[in-house]
Length: 320
Image (tube, rainbow, N blue to C red):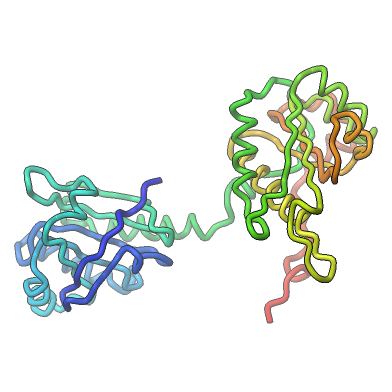
């Protein structure tokens, strides 16, 4: 997802307005060719009428001087800031200048400065209302629970179809982006996907995890205490941070249409012996495509199709 270009421009009051001022909120930045022309005036009126519904987060940008922008704003009672891109440098970087002329365009940015929607070569009439609808939709989507988190479940009905190494590496790449104490990155992963090594690892599984033998890949997640911060009151961050990495992996797998199911039912000593590991075996993760149920016992088949069960939120949170 591309970001709004970095910039530092002046408002109609000759005050600086920069890329940094966009961060932390959703913004509408609309570019127009020349203040005072009929099309640009109509566009300004229409955005101005919706100012409060945009929560005041509108910026109008044009090549006009700050003095011209000040007169334009006062004449039409505009509530939002007008910004001068006098050399069209920002517009050039956004690709909205053709034959030296600015192309009327609008961008919605999010709190990270990412461009979430753009309109190039805008037709003025009704445009502001269309932008408002898109602005509201983007915010609504962002404030909902992440779709992959909602979808993720500890499914067991795995197909044996092989998973490409590229996809397995992408899961580890996502996990490796997790935060950690002082950026120590204590997590370690052994991705087991050959028939010989999978059969070796199957020896360490508990009987209740029989279904994992159908998974085309099993990931051994391990760490050592000394790989991470060891702080007062027995705060061993290696386990915490490795758990964060696993969480990232689970969400990425779900986004990619894969099941990633971590378990605790295995013999950690045997896992270490089989694969020459030391430290702590934090979890084993079964990875595969969903959609095979005949190998499941009655209990697991029922769980596979049951609704997600969570205690009431009030039992796990205090707002103080």
